[in-house]
Length: 110
Length: 239
Image (spheres, each protein chain N blue to C red):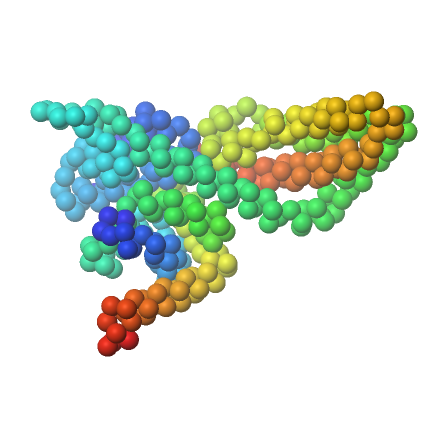
Protein backbone atom coordinates (compact mmCIF):
# COMPACT_ATOMS: atom_id res chain seq x y z
CA UNK A 1 0.00 0.00 0.00
CA UNK A 2 1.57 3.23 -1.04
CA UNK A 3 0.00 5.89 1.15
CA UNK A 4 0.47 4.93 4.73
CA UNK A 5 1.57 2.12 6.96
CA UNK A 6 -1.60 2.73 8.95
CA UNK A 7 -3.66 1.19 6.16
CA UNK A 8 -1.51 -1.93 5.97
CA UNK A 9 -3.19 -3.72 8.85
CA UNK A 10 -6.62 -3.13 7.34
CA UNK A 11 -5.87 -4.54 3.90
CA UNK A 12 -7.58 -7.90 4.45
CA UNK A 13 -10.62 -6.16 5.93
CA UNK A 14 -10.82 -3.88 2.89
CA UNK A 15 -10.63 -6.87 0.52
CA UNK A 16 -13.23 -8.84 2.47
CA UNK A 17 -15.58 -5.84 2.63
CA UNK A 18 -15.34 -5.27 -1.12
CA UNK A 19 -15.95 -8.92 -1.89
CA UNK A 20 -18.89 -8.90 0.48
CA UNK A 21 -20.47 -6.13 -1.58
CA UNK A 22 -19.68 -7.72 -4.95
CA UNK A 23 -20.36 -11.24 -6.07
CA UNK A 24 -16.81 -11.76 -7.37
CA UNK A 25 -13.84 -9.55 -8.23
CA UNK A 26 -10.43 -9.92 -9.88
CA UNK A 27 -7.15 -8.45 -8.64
CA UNK A 28 -6.89 -5.38 -10.85
CA UNK A 29 -10.58 -4.59 -10.30
CA UNK A 30 -9.98 -4.51 -6.52
CA UNK A 31 -7.11 -2.01 -6.85
CA UNK A 32 -9.20 0.23 -9.10
CA UNK A 33 -12.29 0.02 -6.89
CA UNK A 34 -10.29 1.05 -3.80
CA UNK A 35 -8.69 3.89 -5.74
CA UNK A 36 -12.10 5.11 -6.95
CA UNK A 37 -13.84 4.80 -3.56
CA UNK A 38 -11.10 6.72 -1.78
CA UNK A 39 -10.73 9.24 -4.62
CA UNK A 40 -7.13 8.18 -5.17
CA UNK A 41 -6.21 8.58 -1.50
CA UNK A 42 -5.51 4.89 -1.05
CA UNK A 43 -3.61 2.93 -3.65
CA UNK A 44 -3.15 -0.78 -3.10
CA UNK A 45 0.09 -1.94 -4.65
CA UNK A 46 0.38 -5.20 -6.52
CA UNK A 47 3.05 -6.34 -4.10
CA UNK A 48 0.59 -6.09 -1.19
CA UNK A 49 -2.67 -7.13 -2.86
CA UNK A 50 -1.78 -10.56 -4.26
CA UNK A 51 -0.04 -11.98 -1.18
CA UNK A 52 -3.10 -10.86 0.83
CA UNK A 53 -5.50 -12.51 -1.65
CA UNK A 54 -3.45 -15.73 -1.71
CA UNK A 55 -3.30 -15.76 2.09
CA UNK A 56 -7.08 -15.39 2.38
CA UNK A 57 -7.50 -18.16 -0.20
CA UNK A 58 -5.13 -20.44 1.76
CA UNK A 59 -7.12 -19.76 4.93
CA UNK A 60 -10.28 -20.87 3.15
CA UNK A 61 -11.92 -17.43 3.31
CA UNK A 62 -11.86 -16.95 -0.45
CA UNK A 63 -12.72 -19.22 -3.31
CA UNK A 64 -11.41 -18.92 -6.84
CA UNK A 65 -13.24 -19.07 -10.15
CA UNK A 66 -11.37 -18.93 -13.46
CA UNK A 67 -12.89 -17.65 -16.70
CA UNK A 68 -11.56 -16.85 -20.13
CA UNK A 69 -11.75 -13.11 -20.87
CA UNK A 70 -10.26 -11.42 -23.98
CA UNK A 71 -7.70 -14.10 -24.91
CA UNK A 72 -6.48 -14.64 -21.36
CA UNK A 73 -7.57 -16.30 -18.13
CA UNK A 74 -8.98 -14.21 -15.33
CA UNK A 75 -8.98 -15.32 -11.71
CA UNK A 76 -12.05 -14.14 -9.81
CA UNK A 77 -12.12 -14.17 -6.04
CA UNK A 78 -15.28 -14.63 -4.04
CA UNK A 79 -16.12 -15.13 -0.38
CA UNK A 80 -16.67 -18.60 1.02
CA UNK A 81 -19.20 -19.20 3.77
CA UNK A 82 -16.42 -18.90 6.36
CA UNK A 83 -15.21 -15.77 4.58
CA UNK A 84 -18.62 -14.12 4.90
CA UNK A 85 -18.65 -14.82 8.66
CA UNK A 86 -15.09 -13.58 9.02
CA UNK A 87 -15.98 -10.34 7.21
CA UNK A 88 -18.55 -9.53 9.91
CA UNK A 89 -15.93 -10.15 12.64
CA UNK A 90 -13.26 -8.10 10.87
CA UNK A 91 -15.61 -5.16 10.31
CA UNK A 92 -16.66 -5.18 13.95
CA UNK A 93 -13.00 -5.29 14.94
CA UNK A 94 -12.22 -2.32 12.68
CA UNK A 95 -15.19 -0.29 13.97
CA UNK A 96 -14.00 -0.94 17.51
CA UNK A 97 -10.48 0.15 16.54
CA UNK A 98 -11.74 3.39 14.96
CA UNK A 99 -13.83 4.10 18.09
CA UNK A 100 -10.82 3.56 20.35
CA UNK A 101 -8.62 5.77 18.18
CA UNK A 102 -11.28 8.49 18.20
CA UNK A 103 -11.42 8.34 22.00
CA UNK A 104 -7.66 8.73 22.10
CA UNK A 105 -7.31 11.44 19.50
CA UNK A 106 -10.41 13.44 20.22
CA UNK A 107 -11.84 12.66 23.68
CA UNK A 108 -14.61 15.24 23.28
CA UNK A 109 -16.15 13.45 20.27
CA UNK A 110 -15.99 9.95 21.71
CA UNK B 1 -8.25 0.27 -25.65
CA UNK B 2 -8.05 -3.51 -25.89
CA UNK B 3 -4.70 -5.15 -26.51
CA UNK B 4 -4.29 -7.40 -29.53
CA UNK B 5 -3.56 -11.12 -29.28
CA UNK B 6 0.05 -10.40 -30.34
CA UNK B 7 0.51 -7.78 -27.62
CA UNK B 8 -0.86 -10.18 -24.99
CA UNK B 9 1.50 -12.86 -26.29
CA UNK B 10 4.36 -10.35 -26.04
CA UNK B 11 3.54 -9.75 -22.36
CA UNK B 12 3.34 -13.50 -21.74
CA UNK B 13 6.77 -14.00 -23.35
CA UNK B 14 8.16 -11.08 -21.35
CA UNK B 15 6.96 -12.82 -18.15
CA UNK B 16 8.60 -16.10 -19.23
CA UNK B 17 11.86 -14.22 -19.91
CA UNK B 18 11.54 -12.72 -16.43
CA UNK B 19 11.58 -16.27 -15.06
CA UNK B 20 7.89 -16.57 -14.24
CA UNK B 21 8.02 -20.13 -15.55
CA UNK B 22 4.85 -21.59 -14.00
CA UNK B 23 1.76 -21.01 -16.13
CA UNK B 24 -0.57 -20.98 -13.11
CA UNK B 25 1.45 -18.11 -11.61
CA UNK B 26 1.73 -16.31 -14.92
CA UNK B 27 -1.98 -16.32 -15.68
CA UNK B 28 -2.82 -13.99 -12.80
CA UNK B 29 0.12 -11.68 -13.52
CA UNK B 30 -0.74 -11.62 -17.20
CA UNK B 31 -4.34 -10.60 -16.58
CA UNK B 32 -3.30 -7.87 -14.15
CA UNK B 33 -0.60 -6.47 -16.45
CA UNK B 34 -2.85 -6.56 -19.53
CA UNK B 35 -5.69 -4.82 -17.62
CA UNK B 36 -3.31 -2.17 -16.25
CA UNK B 37 -1.65 -1.53 -19.63
CA UNK B 38 -5.05 -1.23 -21.35
CA UNK B 39 -6.21 1.16 -18.65
CA UNK B 40 -3.10 3.34 -18.89
CA UNK B 41 -3.24 3.48 -22.67
CA UNK B 42 -6.93 4.46 -22.60
CA UNK B 43 -6.97 6.93 -19.70
CA UNK B 44 -3.45 8.36 -19.70
CA UNK B 45 -2.80 8.25 -23.43
CA UNK B 46 0.60 6.59 -23.04
CA UNK B 47 2.11 4.12 -25.51
CA UNK B 48 2.14 0.35 -25.03
CA UNK B 49 5.86 0.41 -24.17
CA UNK B 50 5.54 3.21 -21.61
CA UNK B 51 2.52 1.58 -19.97
CA UNK B 52 4.21 -1.83 -19.73
CA UNK B 53 7.36 -0.33 -18.27
CA UNK B 54 5.34 1.50 -15.64
CA UNK B 55 3.44 -1.64 -14.65
CA UNK B 56 6.70 -3.64 -14.59
CA UNK B 57 8.08 -1.10 -12.13
CA UNK B 58 4.92 -1.16 -9.99
CA UNK B 59 5.40 -4.88 -9.34
CA UNK B 60 8.60 -4.03 -7.50
CA UNK B 61 11.02 -4.67 -10.38
CA UNK B 62 13.80 -2.19 -11.05
CA UNK B 63 13.88 -0.65 -14.50
CA UNK B 64 17.17 1.26 -14.36
CA UNK B 65 20.62 -0.09 -13.74
CA UNK B 66 22.41 2.99 -12.45
CA UNK B 67 22.20 6.19 -14.51
CA UNK B 68 21.32 5.83 -18.14
CA UNK B 69 21.19 8.75 -20.59
CA UNK B 70 19.19 6.89 -23.18
CA UNK B 71 16.49 4.71 -21.79
CA UNK B 72 16.00 1.35 -23.49
CA UNK B 73 12.49 -0.08 -23.21
CA UNK B 74 13.61 -3.67 -23.74
CA UNK B 75 16.49 -3.46 -21.27
CA UNK B 76 14.23 -1.82 -18.68
CA UNK B 77 11.92 -4.81 -18.81
CA UNK B 78 14.69 -7.30 -18.17
CA UNK B 79 17.17 -5.48 -15.91
CA UNK B 80 15.60 -6.87 -12.78
CA UNK B 81 12.80 -9.33 -11.89
CA UNK B 82 12.96 -9.05 -8.10
CA UNK B 83 9.25 -8.16 -7.85
CA UNK B 84 8.18 -11.22 -9.81
CA UNK B 85 10.52 -13.48 -7.83
CA UNK B 86 9.00 -12.19 -4.60
CA UNK B 87 5.50 -12.68 -6.02
CA UNK B 88 6.26 -16.34 -6.90
CA UNK B 89 7.93 -17.06 -3.56
CA UNK B 90 5.03 -15.61 -1.57
CA UNK B 91 2.56 -17.54 -3.71
CA UNK B 92 4.53 -20.73 -3.15
CA UNK B 93 4.31 -20.21 0.61
CA UNK B 94 0.55 -19.67 0.45
CA UNK B 95 0.03 -22.70 -1.83
CA UNK B 96 1.83 -24.82 0.77
CA UNK B 97 -0.48 -23.46 3.48
CA UNK B 98 -3.53 -23.98 1.30
CA UNK B 99 -2.62 -27.63 0.56
CA UNK B 100 -1.88 -28.26 4.23
CA UNK B 101 -5.20 -26.76 5.37
CA UNK B 102 -7.15 -28.66 2.69
CA UNK B 103 -5.36 -31.88 3.64
CA UNK B 104 -6.46 -31.73 7.26
CA UNK B 105 -9.93 -30.35 6.51
CA UNK B 106 -10.71 -33.33 4.27
CA UNK B 107 -8.81 -35.94 6.29
CA UNK B 108 -11.60 -37.39 8.46
CA UNK B 109 -14.30 -37.44 5.73
CA UNK B 110 -11.83 -39.32 3.51
CA UNK B 111 -10.76 -41.81 6.16
CA UNK B 112 -14.38 -42.69 6.89
CA UNK B 113 -15.41 -42.88 3.25
CA UNK B 114 -16.68 -46.26 2.02
CA UNK B 115 -14.11 -46.43 -0.79
CA UNK B 116 -11.14 -45.89 1.47
CA UNK B 117 -12.43 -48.33 4.09
CA UNK B 118 -12.78 -51.01 1.39
CA UNK B 119 -9.26 -50.33 0.09
CA UNK B 120 -7.93 -50.41 3.63
CA UNK B 121 -9.70 -53.72 4.29
CA UNK B 122 -8.12 -55.27 1.17
CA UNK B 123 -4.65 -54.03 2.14
CA UNK B 124 -5.20 -55.31 5.67
CA UNK B 125 -6.14 -58.73 4.28
CA UNK B 126 -3.03 -58.92 2.10
CA UNK B 127 -0.88 -57.79 5.03
CA UNK B 128 -2.38 -60.55 7.14
CA UNK B 129 -1.65 -63.13 4.41
CA UNK B 130 1.95 -61.82 4.18
CA UNK B 131 2.24 -61.97 7.96
CA UNK B 132 1.41 -65.70 7.84
CA UNK B 133 4.65 -66.25 5.89
CA UNK B 134 6.80 -63.94 8.01
CA UNK B 135 6.57 -60.66 9.93
CA UNK B 136 8.81 -58.95 7.38
CA UNK B 137 6.56 -60.03 4.49
CA UNK B 138 3.58 -58.54 6.30
CA UNK B 139 5.45 -55.28 6.83
CA UNK B 140 6.55 -55.13 3.20
CA UNK B 141 2.96 -55.58 2.01
CA UNK B 142 1.92 -52.71 4.29
CA UNK B 143 4.76 -50.48 3.05
CA UNK B 144 3.69 -51.17 -0.53
CA UNK B 145 0.52 -49.19 0.30
CA UNK B 146 2.68 -46.08 0.86
CA UNK B 147 4.93 -46.73 -2.14
CA UNK B 148 2.00 -47.30 -4.52
CA UNK B 149 0.25 -44.07 -3.38
CA UNK B 150 3.39 -41.96 -3.73
CA UNK B 151 4.44 -43.37 -7.11
CA UNK B 152 0.90 -42.96 -8.44
CA UNK B 153 1.19 -39.30 -7.41
CA UNK B 154 4.49 -38.92 -9.23
CA UNK B 155 3.34 -40.55 -12.45
CA UNK B 156 -0.38 -39.69 -12.46
CA UNK B 157 -1.25 -38.05 -15.75
CA UNK B 158 2.09 -38.98 -17.33
CA UNK B 159 4.87 -36.51 -18.02
CA UNK B 160 2.75 -33.73 -19.44
CA UNK B 161 4.23 -30.25 -19.71
CA UNK B 162 1.31 -28.51 -18.00
CA UNK B 163 1.96 -30.71 -14.95
CA UNK B 164 5.66 -29.90 -14.65
CA UNK B 165 5.01 -26.20 -15.33
CA UNK B 166 2.28 -25.81 -12.71
CA UNK B 167 3.42 -24.54 -9.33
CA UNK B 168 0.29 -25.90 -7.63
CA UNK B 169 0.82 -29.43 -8.99
CA UNK B 170 4.56 -29.37 -8.27
CA UNK B 171 3.91 -28.28 -4.69
CA UNK B 172 1.38 -31.11 -4.25
CA UNK B 173 3.87 -33.73 -5.38
CA UNK B 174 6.92 -32.20 -3.67
CA UNK B 175 7.02 -34.55 -0.67
CA UNK B 176 6.39 -37.79 -2.58
CA UNK B 177 9.95 -38.98 -2.96
CA UNK B 178 10.58 -38.24 0.71
CA UNK B 179 7.48 -40.23 1.69
CA UNK B 180 8.73 -43.31 -0.19
CA UNK B 181 11.95 -43.18 1.85
CA UNK B 182 10.40 -42.67 5.29
CA UNK B 183 9.28 -46.31 5.91
CA UNK B 184 12.80 -47.56 5.18
CA UNK B 185 14.38 -44.98 7.46
CA UNK B 186 11.98 -46.00 10.22
CA UNK B 187 12.90 -49.67 9.67
CA UNK B 188 16.61 -48.86 9.84
CA UNK B 189 16.13 -46.87 13.06
CA UNK B 190 14.02 -49.67 14.51
CA UNK B 191 16.67 -52.33 13.72
CA UNK B 192 19.43 -50.10 15.08
CA UNK B 193 17.51 -49.42 18.30
CA UNK B 194 16.53 -53.06 18.91
CA UNK B 195 19.77 -54.61 17.71
CA UNK B 196 20.47 -57.82 19.61
CA UNK B 197 16.96 -57.95 21.12
CA UNK B 198 15.50 -61.39 20.61
CA UNK B 199 11.81 -60.60 20.26
CA UNK B 200 11.49 -57.17 18.68
CA UNK B 201 8.25 -55.24 19.19
CA UNK B 202 7.19 -55.34 15.52
CA UNK B 203 3.73 -54.10 16.42
CA UNK B 204 5.30 -50.57 16.64
CA UNK B 205 6.20 -50.81 12.95
CA UNK B 206 2.74 -52.08 12.04
CA UNK B 207 1.12 -49.11 13.82
CA UNK B 208 3.47 -46.51 12.24
CA UNK B 209 3.15 -47.97 8.74
CA UNK B 210 -0.63 -48.16 9.03
CA UNK B 211 -0.68 -44.43 9.85
CA UNK B 212 1.65 -43.74 6.93
CA UNK B 213 -0.59 -45.72 4.58
CA UNK B 214 -3.63 -43.65 5.62
CA UNK B 215 -1.78 -40.35 5.30
CA UNK B 216 -0.21 -41.25 2.01
CA UNK B 217 -3.48 -42.50 0.50
CA UNK B 218 -5.23 -39.29 1.54
CA UNK B 219 -2.34 -37.31 0.05
CA UNK B 220 -2.94 -39.10 -3.25
CA UNK B 221 -6.63 -38.26 -3.11
CA UNK B 222 -5.84 -34.57 -2.57
CA UNK B 223 -3.25 -34.63 -5.31
CA UNK B 224 -5.72 -36.05 -7.85
CA UNK B 225 -8.21 -33.31 -6.96
CA UNK B 226 -5.53 -30.59 -7.45
CA UNK B 227 -4.35 -32.23 -10.69
CA UNK B 228 -7.88 -32.27 -12.13
CA UNK B 229 -8.55 -28.63 -11.20
CA UNK B 230 -5.37 -27.44 -12.94
CA UNK B 231 -5.87 -29.76 -15.91
CA UNK B 232 -9.28 -28.09 -16.43
CA UNK B 233 -7.76 -24.60 -16.09
CA UNK B 234 -5.02 -25.44 -18.55
CA UNK B 235 -7.57 -26.73 -21.06
CA UNK B 236 -9.47 -23.46 -20.64
CA UNK B 237 -6.25 -21.52 -21.20
CA UNK B 238 -5.53 -23.45 -24.40
CA UNK B 239 -9.09 -23.21 -25.76
